[in-house]
Image (cartoon, rainbow, N blue to C red; front, side, top):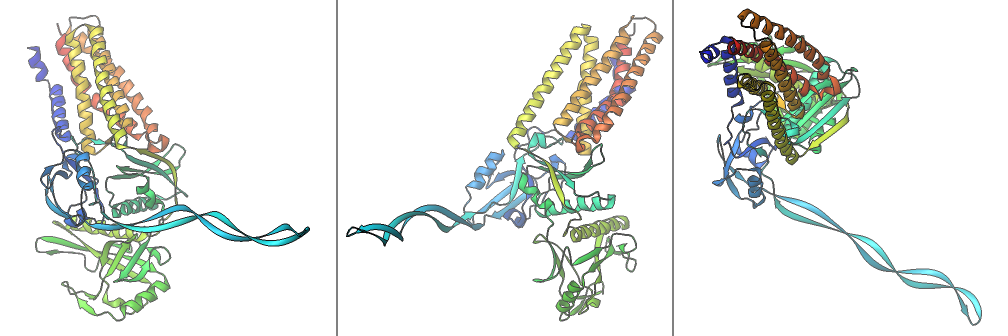
Length: 573
C-alpha cells in the first residue's frame, strides 16, 4: 500500500522522469570500441579523402569513430598507431568508420637531417723559437704539426611516410565530456597587455578560434576569464594538445589577399579599418534576401579601408582582368580575391567590376548566406560576415598576449585520474551507505537516502551532458560536495521526521516543513558562497562552483521534495 503511494506520488514521478531524461542525455554505451577522430590536419591524406573535421559542439557519442583499417579491427589508440607506424609510401588503405568508408593514400615526404660530429684535423703551424747555434743564442722559425678539433657537418635526406593526418582518442562511452584533467591536453592562461572593451574581446576570442581551426585544431575551449581584482584573462584548453599547438595564439599572424599568386594586400599595415558597426556592415540593403528554388539567399556587405600602397597594387593587378556576369546578373572581374591566413586558404571573394584598374582605398566586401527560411538565411549571412571580418582582423591581433600559466597533462595521467575518481566515488558511496545504516539501523530510512544520492548524481551528469559542461577534477569535487550536502539534508529531514514519532499526520508534516526551512537556509548560503568562486583564480575554479550550484539546485527543486514525501508516507502510523 505504501509502495503504491510512493510510486504514484507526483514528486517521485518527477524524479523518475528526470532520471530517464538524464540517462537519455548521457547516452551510455560501454561496448563502444574503436578510436574517435579528434581533429584532422589541413591538406593531409585524411583531409583529402573527405573525412570531416569534427565540430567542437558535437556530442561525444556523435563523433566519428574509426572501427577498422583495411578490414582489421581498431579497438584502441595503440591499435591505430601500430597500424599507422607500419605504413609504406604510396600505400592505399581503407578506413571504416561508423559514418562511412574512406580510401586514403599514405604520401611520402623527404625529411632533411643534419648530422654534426667533431673530427681531429692536423695542421702545420710556424712558430718563432730560440735555439743555441754554434754556442750563440739565436731566434729561428720552426714548423710544427698541431692537432685541432673541428666540426664536420653532413646533410642527408630520408624518405619517410607522412602521417595520414588524424588525431584520435579512445572512443567515448557516454556523452559526458571529460575535462583536460581526465583526458589529457594543455591549458594556457593568457593575459592581454592592455584592458580590452567587450567588442574587442569578442573579436579577439573569435580570431583565436579561427586561427586554431585553420591549424586543424577543433576540440578546443577559448573563453574570457577574470579574477576578483578585475584583471582580464583568456583561458585556452586544447584536448589532446601540447604547448606547440598554442604558439600561434601569441603570434601576430599573417593575413594575405591574393589574385592568383600576386599579393594585393596583407593584414596589419595594409588594412587600416574593418567596419563592424550597423551603418556599414550587415545585410546588403540593395539586394537583401530572395528565394532560389526551395532555399533563401541573403547578401551581406561590409566596408574595409586599405592603405594607399595596397590600393595602387590592386589597381595594377586588376586593370588587365576581364569583366564577366554572374548568374544573378551582377558583374565581376574574371579572377577572384583569395584570402589566406598563415598560408592556409580560408575563403575567396568575387571582385566587383567597378574596381577594375582603380586605386580605391575604401572597398566593400560582400558574400552570401543560405537557409531554408528567410530568418535562417539572414542568420547564416551574418555569421559568414562575422567570420570574414574575423579573418581580416586576425591578420594582426589587436593586442599582444602574455602567457601567465601553462598546464600540460598527459593522456596516461588523465586515465589515472579517471580511475582514481571512480574509486574515490565508489568508496564515498559505500562509506555514506554504512554511516546511514549505522545511524538509523532501519532500511526504511537508509534505502531512500541511498536512492536519492544516486539519483542526484545521475541527474547532475545528465545536465552536464546536455549543456556540454566538461567534467574535470574541480567538477568532481563539486559532485562530491553535492552528494555530501544532499545526504546532510536528508539526514535533517529524517531526524525531524523521526523525532517523537508522533502519531498525528499533521505533526509529522510540520516537522518535515521545519526541516525544509533549515535546508533552504543552507542552500542559499552555499549558493552565495559559490558565486565568488566563479571568478576567483581567473575562472579555474568555475567548474567546482558551477557544478556545486547546479547539483544543490537539483536537490532543492527535484530530489529533496520527493524524499520528504517518501519519508512522510513511510513513517506515517
